[in-house]
Image (cartoon, rainbow, N blue to C red; front, side):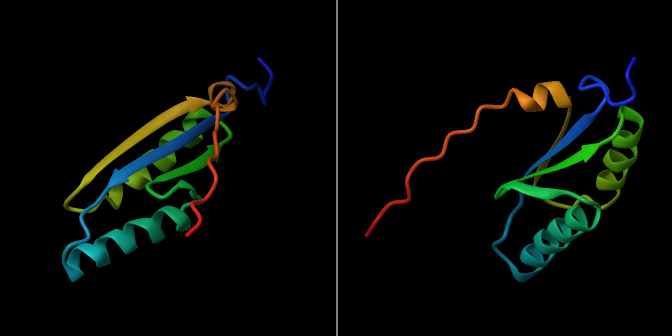
Length: 99
């Protein structure tokens, strides 16, 4: 199989919904986001970050790393998909509301 096959290259998506009521919550939220960014993730939407990985083995390393800095509270999901699947995402952009 080709080394750069669209079925071998992976994308990790991290979805999260974290509390931000208290100062401690906000600090944990900020630290989680900064750790994602430090590990090479970029914001896809406000609570969805993505990272490109050369292989599933490489993706496993980053998934393990994300699990090592999970905050105590909130909900976090991690999804790993192939480059082919990621390329089939349909994105729609609405117009910004005017005041």
